[in-house]
Image 1 (tube, helix red, strand yellow):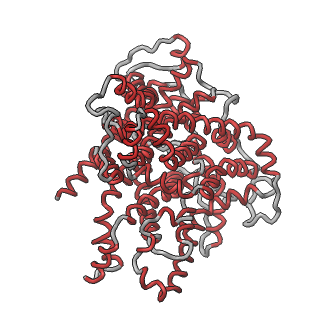
Image 2: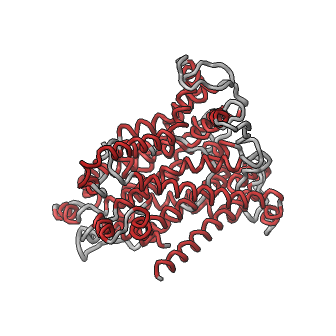
Length: 289
Length: 322
């Protein structure tokens, strides 16, 4: 699954002498597993606690031998609606972000626009703006416009991560589309819009998927805007409810951890199903900016 | 900002020989075509102006206003000059928050970078399952930060947390540290969790940079006796430098504004011992409802971030020139 992302896979140092080094390489696997086990232990613990029967805040057993899904039943009963809210906000943010970021990325990559460089610079500067500064100003604006406690308001605010990221990732990709292919469409009489829709979009499919997946995760995992731009329990993303859940002097951690596991499912699914897009996203969004 | 140059270079590399596509009718770039071109970019630019430009400007303005709950009823926010800044800067919490911000950022960055680089260098070797294991390391970074802080709160619990249970299994360890409730340890614990959260990002980007270093360099170096640590010092580190710059600048800029981790673990407590400028700005605006002072703190945070980026990039450019 990982070979797709590694052009230099076969040229690691010592690759030629590989056969003589079989035992040593297995030793590396052992160290590698140890590193991952260390890094993922908190996630194992999350899962372990979520599967324990409710028993007050006592020391959790190391393994879930008393396996039960009670924690999940409670979590879905109490947090199901909030999970749906998060899902709506996440999907809405994907649709909105891709709708405005894709044409912009194409314009910046392929048109001779004087604006392209200042816009790129502006996008990089946005990365320095703290979320709390945005929230501070948006709160009063949202209050005036009646957008507090609305899904639409959260979609717009949460896209603040997805839009710049999507532009950067897709711009890097679309810059790589050979000029001749797009020009062929122009020769056939297509305008910018038709060339974009029927030639560029299909070619940029992978970049779109990468941008969309990450935009979803950003919006799904957002906490700051959920915390500041909602004031009632009507619209409450799962991140905020998890925070208030933990803060309320808990004596039973299994439903909390079950909620945490449920809120982590999109990330886990993404890593298992769409791993190659993840690698593109992490490096594409950061190194190429 | 040097990032722009890096981006241009990266884009240029990806593009190969391709220059920007000209308009449909070369030479005859009429008004309509131009309007269509602008329309591609306009919605995104409008969004960025509304959700980044406007908040930045609005915060600068709010910083000079008495902007409190009554503003929401009366619509009035009287000008108070520099009062918000003097109030904020002279408050007892500010010094602590500034110190915490510096310690939190420096501690997180050093930890994330060193561990991320070590893991990236390790995974440069090929061994069974290396690709699969390397992808799993991203999980802590992809799950919602609040979910991660929730489980860490339980791991770090003084009486029943798994960390203290492991510690007491060690010989000669009798204490159970109050990781999140002691004023001296809470900042250490918060930095530790933030390092854990940041390793995947650092590791992945640095790994990408390592992959770009041609193997011929290592082969040539090996002939001259440069292997192991010496190969790292004389080949890997100099070649990795541009990527290191990106990782460190982005890392610091992102860490300065961290809020989720601290709110999720300690809410800035106990007794402000984990309060940073970002969390203080949140608390002043959204708990004390003094949006003017909250905005002043936010502006100070932006200035810090800007100052770091400028100083670092300038220093780095000089170092590269020499």
